[in-house]
Amino acid sequence: MEVKELEKMIREQEGSLSLAFPALMRKVYVWMALALALTGLTAYGIADNTNLAFTLIGNRALFWGIAIAEFALVMFLTARIRKMSLTTATLSFLLYSVLNGVTMSVIFLAFTASSIATTFYITAGTFGIMAFYGYVTKADLSKLGSILRMALLGLIVALVVNIFMRNSMFDLVISAVGVLIFTGLTAYDSQKIKTALAMQEHPDETAQKVALLGALTLYLDFINLFIYLLRFFGRSNN
Image (cartoon, rainbow, N blue to C red; front, side, top):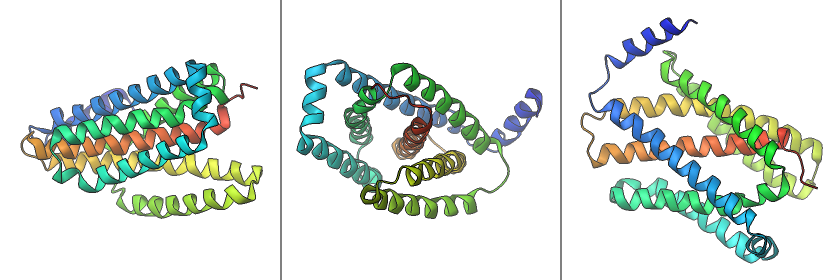
C-alpha cells in the first residue's frame, strides 16, 4: 500500500474521532516511551554496577521478592486504576517500570550489548508495524484478541511446565509461540485502545487514566515481545 493511501485511510478514520482523541493518543505513546526508557536505564545502571548486580543475582530472596512485588503492583494497577487519582496511577506505572528494569538487569549480564541492541531494534520495528496496522485496519480484531488471550494462558502453563522439564527444544517452541502471540496482541491492543479513546469526549482525568492503561498494555506487549525475540537473537556473554 502506498504512503498516500495510508495517509488517506488515517484521515478518513480520524474524521469520526473525538477532538480529545489526538491528545489522548499522544499521551499513550509518551507514557509508554517514558516507561520503556526508565526500564532500560534502570536495567543498564544495575548491570553496570558490579557489586549491585551480583548482590541482586546472589540473593534469590531479594530477586524474587522484587519480582513478586512487581507482579502484584501491575495487577493492582490494572484492577484499581479507575479508583486511583491520575497522579497515583501514573507514579504506580513508573514505579512498575523501574521494578521491571531491576529484574531485567540480568539480561545485560547474560547477553552481549550488541545483540540486545539488535533485538531492541527488531522489536521496535515489529511493534511499530503491528501497532500501526491495528490502528488503521477496518477489520474487527476482537475475535483474534480472544484467541490470543486464550493462547497466552496456554503459554503461561507451558512455561511453568518447562521449568521442571528443562527441555531446550520445548523452550524454543515456547519462544516462537510467544513471539507470535505478542505480535498479534500488539495489533489487537492498538485497535482496542483506539476504540476506547475515541469514546472519550474530553481529555479529563478519567480519559487520561484510560490512556494510561493503554500505555501500560502496549508497554507489556513491547517488553514481552522483546524478551521472546531475545531468545532467538541474543548472544551469550559467556
